[in-house]
Image (tube, rainbow, N blue to C red; front, side, top):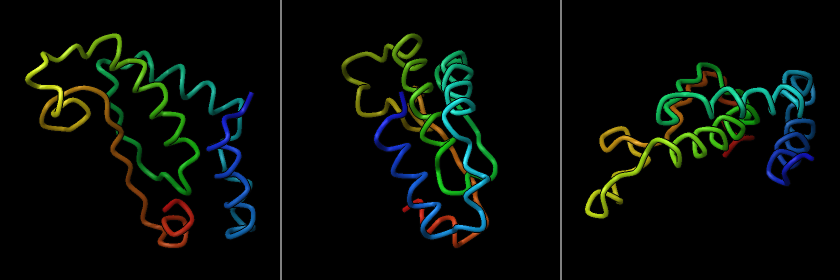
Length: 105
């Protein structure tokens, strides 16, 4: 079952970037990306070329699961979890197409 956020990304991509809508990962690839990213050490992912964010959302879902399994920061460090400085899950995405960034934001 596709999450509401992923359906919204697909819909917005088709509406605002119709010529690139075929590039959205889709539910099958998205499920694979979520699974693979959940196996990463502490949920740390580098994504190059995020387009409108579908795969990024899948990576985030998996990274959060990995962070829950491996993260375990002490209470005094909870505010740092999920940041590059404090460890824990995060996804760094890079995209150079300004049109795609406009749809994703």
